[in-house]
Amino acid sequence: MTTPLMPSKDGTWRVYQVSIETDVRKGAASKYITEYLQAIGFSQTQISPTMIFERGATLASMYNFNPKAQKTEVSVDFASVGNQTIIELTMRINCLGNRPLSKDYEFWAAEIAGIEDVLEHGYVNPYISAFAAERAFWYNVTVALIVWSLLLIIVISLTMAILFLPLL
Image (cartoon, rainbow, N blue to C red; front, side, top):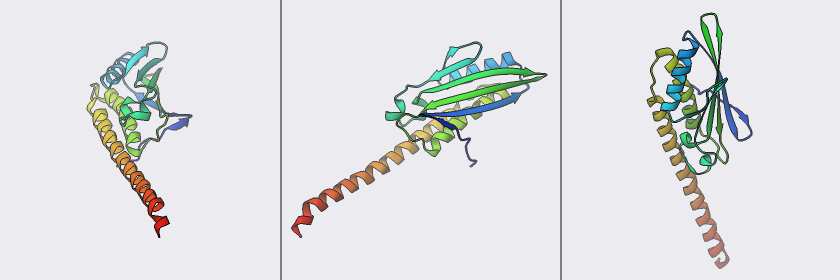
């Protein structure tokens, strides 16, 4: 397994900044990216000059184990140089009240890889993102259950010690 692309931190936000070079013309690249992001649950909030897409809720990271529910903003800028189109992609994920785990980072890297995939092949494949989201969800649930179980064991142990230690 390769190490996923790691974002920078900006307060409670995780920020990915990726530059993609492609032979696809700007208009076609814009269409492909829009179709892909809409297929994985984003809605377009701005078309020009920078395309902006949003998904999720601001407080979802505090109560939802699925990274797809977290507030995510994607901005896309285009530049043409000769036959090449350069796409500047910024993905911002609000992680308020949440410490992302390894599978969350893999999920976000998979979504960026999906953009590269649609530009390379010309068709939308939302299943990579869906698989990574489900994998992250179950990983997060498992970690939460382990943490809560350990916390419960500690609380029971301390309660027992407080109740029965004076009797010795």
